[in-house]
Image (cartoon, rainbow, N blue to C red; front, side):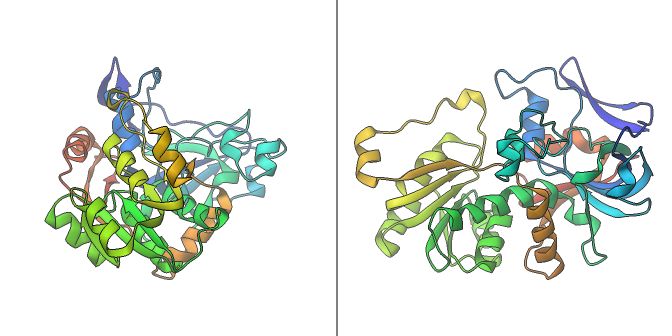
Length: 342
C-alpha cells in the first residue's frame, strides 16, 4: 500500500506492507484524509523536543475492512467510520484512571495517539470509531481533528460560565479549525467576532455567519469601541501575535481559550502581570475531544449545522505541495487528500 513517511526529515511516499489489526483493532481502508496544521509542523520540524516522527496524518474517513480479536464488540466489517479524535489521545485510553473518568482521556497515563492516516490502510482501536450516516460525505474527514478540536473548545465556554448570547472572538476564523468554530458557536447561540487577515478571508468569515468579521490589524480598536470587548476569545492562530490579541480583546473576567500551537521559534506567551490583574481573566488550553464529542459533532454535520469548507483537494502524491500552500496561507478552510493511492 502507499503511505507517507518522513525519512531523515524528508517527506516520501513509499510502498509499505498492509498492517494487521491487533487486539480490539480495526483495519480501515481510508477514503479521505484531512491535512491538519499540526501535520505541517511535524513534517517541518517546527516544534522543539518533538522528534522521531515517521508517520503523518490523523484525520480520516474510511470503511472497516477487517477486525482483530475482540474488535467485533465495537465495530463491524463494512462500517463507514470517522477516525481521529486528534493526534493525541485517540488511539487508546484505559477508561479507569482519574482523567478518563473525568472525560479527559488524552491525559490518561496509558494514552496513545493516532498517527498515520496518510495511507491507503490503517489500523486503529475500534473503540475510538464513530459510524457515519450517508449524509456526511468523505469531504468531512477533517471533522476528525479540526472539527472536533473546535467543538471541544466551544464547549468549554459553557463549562466556564460563558453562556450563549455573549460575544466570543474567534482568532484565526478563516482557518482549518477556526471556520468550524464560527459555525459551531453560532449554532450554539453565541455572538461571534471572526478575526483574520485579508479581504478574501474576511468575506469567507462573513459567509460562515459571523456577526462581525474584523481584520486582525484593526480588531482591538474595533471590538473595544463597538462592543466593549468580548466575554471569551478562542485562539486558533499559529502565530504568537494571535495569542496576544486574543487576550487583549477580553472584557474583565473574560475567558481565554488557547488552541493553536505556534512554532517554537515564535517564543513564549508573555503576560503583563498588571494587565492580567486588571482583566482578572481565566486562561485555559483546549485540545481535541472525546468519542461522545465526536458523536455530537457528527449529528451537527448530519443536520447541516457544520460543514467543512474544502479549500484544496489532491492525491497523496501532492501532500508536500499542499503543506507548502498551507504554510503560505494559499487556501481557506481545509485540505483533503481524496486519493490515498495516487
